[in-house]
Image 1: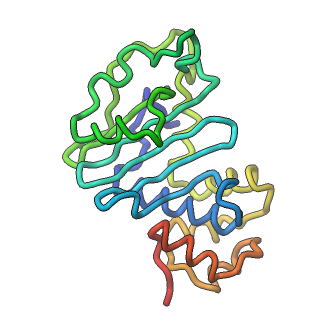
Image 2 (image 1 turned 135 degrees about the vertical axis):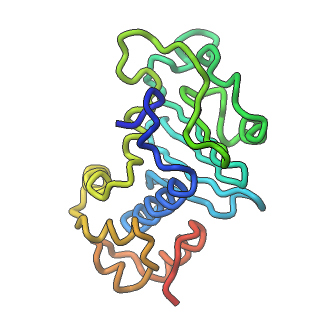
Length: 218
């Protein structure tokens, strides 16, 4: 299981970027309305950055920014023990953002990421061999004090994990084989779309795929 206590199973930045693109496309296939999707991806977040995100509709989210420096990811679980809202006025957990590399300073100051509501923050520089986070003291006797366990464990790249999530979240029966094709970045086509229980038109999903940066069969 992936969490801030054990990040060895989290894909490295390049692989995580591809995974988040695939998950965003899966959501676009299964849900027409953007605001009801769980994962999204913007391949043109800025001239130099791409951004993947998760929003569960209950106030929890994460944002992952990819650029030449690597990847910066912050998450927020409003019910976690380490929520800033555990006290008044709200206060981020001690040390949580103290050693973030200077390469990610822009993300630390990005209003859209509402950093004041962070419960965990991890990063991986392009030159790093593993993910990092601040050397904080976690609450004792807590399995998932910052919400990273349930958020990041879904990012293992396993089609079975994605199938289970899609069927639970969207209440649809989705074939594992179809999900595997998207995780492998098979170019979007009418034939690929028919493998899913979706009534969406290929033209609409192509628009989503272009924003996501997912390949399209022309």
